[in-house]
Image (tube, rainbow, N blue to C red; front, side):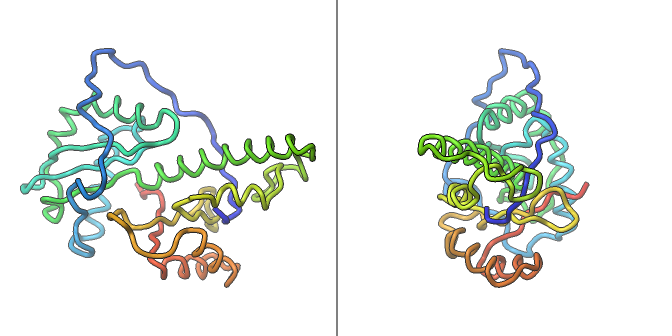
Length: 245
């Protein structure tokens, strides 16, 4: 949203054939956050330990589950209690649920988590899931804007799509489509082909202004990425980046 980022999908994820008798119901879609175990309190976990555990757990879940957020709940001994999958664009949720169901017994038998996660939950694939959502919105807005221009009898292209921000559609209409009901802010990250994504904390009724208001103000204040990022984070948004393996 508003970051004028251009996402390039190198290849569509492959959906592997799976046994038809897998009980996908063992991995449900997630309910409201209020019905789930809470996240650990801020700074209650060692950041490095938690990052290493999260990266290892994501590897255990497998690549087919990456396009959907997976929420894992732990019991009082920090053992895996249950997991669920958030709704994702396209077949993201279904693919993730089936992939996890196929390997669920091994996942539930994973070694205990850091003690700070006892009685709490861990959210995984946050960046990948939000990126998939943003890419889905981008694709839909490109098509919707073209259809709108064709319906109105106007041209459907204004320039070649060869640089970030050049989408072959009228940019103002395209940005309005991206901003409509968006709950994230995506900005080009210097030195990276993937955008930085800012989201609200994963808590019931997260505080703070909507994405449009924050982006409108912070992107006007500066053209420097870190200054924009600091402005967005000052309003309660969290920066997501791919986990470093």
